[in-house]
Length: 310
Image 1 (spheres, one colour):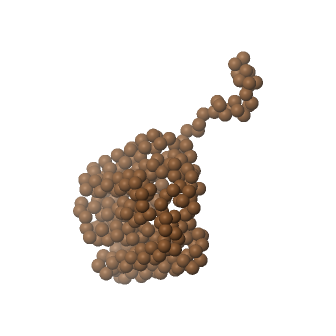
Image 2: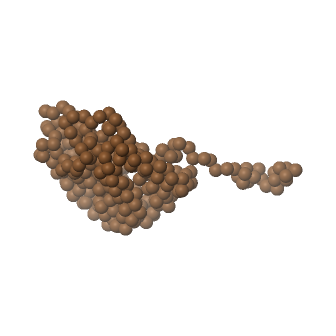
Image 3: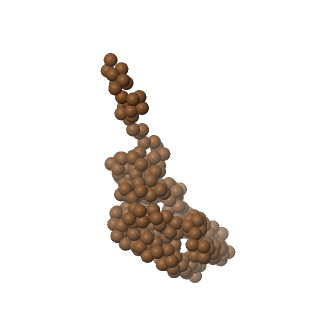
């Protein structure tokens, strides 16, 4: 009788809606929280840092487990970013379907997931590598997930410049996992990513300026305009070109790396000029996507040059 009464009292669609339960998050939602493509690039740089640190190869156990620890820690920072930015993500087309902003994963569950990943990664690094690597990794989590995401992103148009140091840490973490100390060449790898980050991310910001403005995030194109941003992209790209030649000039790498990095630097400058000429958001996105391939190719050139010196 009660079931019949409910059916008569309410339309079928409304009755189903009231009785429906929200779908449980899938493993894909939790995977999305980790930003796997971003983490994959970070782990590539940490692997290269490990392999460049010493003439002899690290043990398989150290190589696999230390990079896994770095990946877990980076994934934890990404998950925290989803929670902190959930209201911003909800109003941006690029991010509105992320699991937390879309309501698929609750903020509490996402934070518990992040804590599990972070604790596992840091413990793994402390056990299989050394405490210095674990502490530096913890500092990078705080730098990205708290200092950048929670404060800098909303406080200054130079957010990506100041906060970029956290994203530049993985090759240093890989290096320290092998050597137990900070080396000038490891810091040079950090400097390369630090100089690359502003033109890489500002290209995306120009293409998505309206969305950032809608979310009230003071990215440089929103606060100072596209032309000002393009000028700063050019200046940082020049700095990037100079810094990326330093591995060759310092004796860290050889001719093979120099030839490879020269080719990708020329391509980067060509795409930047194209966007400056056309002022088209499609060209800005083209530069953004190329910049991701750029940093991957650069670290692969370093790696190949290390094992096949010319």
